[in-house]
Length: 175
Ligand SMILES: [Zn+2]
Image 1: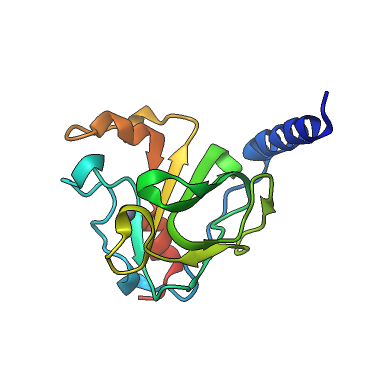
Image 2: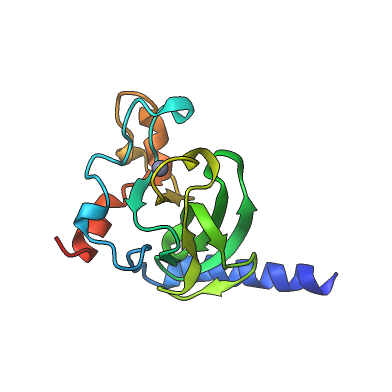
């Protein structure tokens, strides 16, 4: 077996184990953000263009502001991803997927193990945020579906695959 493949498999196993053993934590992913940096109705806002519903929270900040890891994480993807522009996707404890989009710069690389608060990139307006005020689009997905989060309404059933970051942000951000 190729060494990088073996290393990758070991990492995934370790993170899967950590997903069960390491408690989740939360660090605000935009340095210096407060409760005015995002809208309380940002999550699952509808209508939301081709996405239909908005599956994350937009956190506004000056372009170039550091974007940091919200929790421990294994970087699964870092690069260009269509509407998301420059994105980073990381798997963290609790089988949570943290998705950081519209980055100006990407700092993390696939295979990186991130500590909470570690640099991921910087706030920008890449992808379909081009021409709009710079912001981080932040989504928390869950690899363990939670049917009790399902609702009626547009994309209601898909909500079992996502967690609302708003309460976490509200608890961690100054008013
Ligand atoms: Zn967004």
